[in-house]
Image (tube, rainbow, N blue to C red; front, side, top):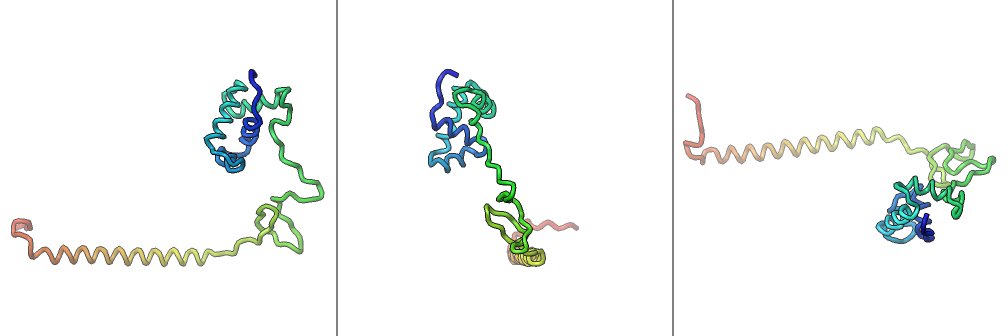
Length: 154
């Protein structure tokens, strides 16, 4: 590795393990094009052909050490992880969102099916109405057509 990485290049490369360029850009308050530029330059300086290879080189480099790839914190054994569902008498088992536990969504199958049928019936009525208008217009224009325009079989 010829040049030392800047703090921003290092930050963008580390965040690229778990985030997209657009997510990193939102997180850092910069353009996603700038994030891509920082990551490409870091890959060039590390002489790596991919982000994964660059992160491997970064982890094995003595200048950056083993903290190159961030590891998620491990929850204490007596506390459940934030995404775990808790089976408590005080709380309902449901969907975990961050540290909030929400009750399961209500069953709405009947409502959804009813809405589907209503929309299908409305679409059918609109289609029938359009067909009737078009056929009425064609029927009204038929007597005014020149005799040679209508072919009949003898």
